Length: 466
Image 1 (cartoon, rainbow, N blue to C red):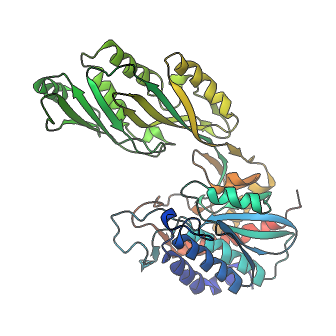
Image 2 (image 1 turned 90 degrees about the horizontal axis):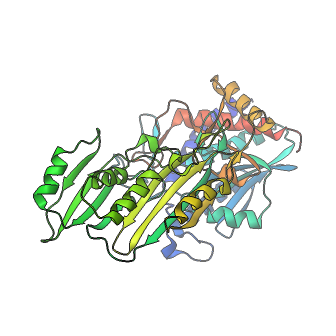
Image 3 (image 1 turned 135 degrees about the vertical axis):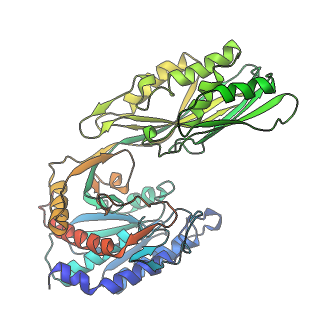
């Protein structure tokens, strides 16, 4: 029996397994962490359930202290497939219960259906198909199941210290055809304390996460006439999707303004309209003190200029991964000082210090301090590598679609491997429903993805050892 027929024969079993896994609410819950369950009972249940499924399917399994686990077959050099079982909170706006795994119009709905329970189980059943078809491999195949991908990768930090690290592999947690390059990710916190309170700017607050373009910014002003500010807003011009509103007066001194922009992922700041920057641009039109003007001008000139780091002289670009991006994700100004957080995605041929040095030179002259609060190194596997060519061949042979490799600003578990790439499950042209209400995976795509992964295992599993 060939691989495709083998997978078709397991179709109902795979669908049922995906549904059962989605029904486990594996959201991080450190308040109820325990030995063997470092991220809470829901994630523990999902890990134990999936490992038990792997055992029933005839594989060897291991639970690594609840931080992660793996399901393995074969012998030889290790090929890794890195998925994850934790999910983001369900949020609002669902048309079906988010952990019901209901099937509607050929789609399995539920949190984790696409990110990343469906694809992880597709990889598991792909392994089963290869095993049952008795196709010889030169490598061991290990499906590694992470449990903290959505929060901080504490799972991988722990697992990779305890277990053998695969040299080569893929993460079924992104897009097809194949992602061969992932930019470096830097989250920087910049601060400056004020010697005394500002006369007019009581507070400015916008953004909650570094990796999101702020869509709301609230400003509290002092020392201005209500009618003057109301008129300045009414006569001001804002681009489509951006607006400003003067809220009810809190007391005789303070006025509150709310600025609305358009949110976007921090790796693509050009797709949003940053409410913080529009608020600062508006405020600069007011008769502020010289110190207030200097602060706003500094922000707009440096982190607020362009989308690609132009304001800090770091508008780097390279052939494998494209342009650097910079997002002003969090901004807080109060009587004590100013603080903001930047999300920077830098090209794969550059290093952390290439980005930091120009920024530090500029900010130190203005009395700011800088802290690196998060860093993921850039990751790159050449397009002409045997890994990339083998996976793209599997994709093209199974789907008949055009094979090509591309780069992203995001980060996947592929970065955990010396030579890892991200491979599926979202096909070109498919809607992006990861982290959205009504997340789903279509049954047709689930089966097709499983067939691609099975052929990928055969192709990579028979590469000569490296």
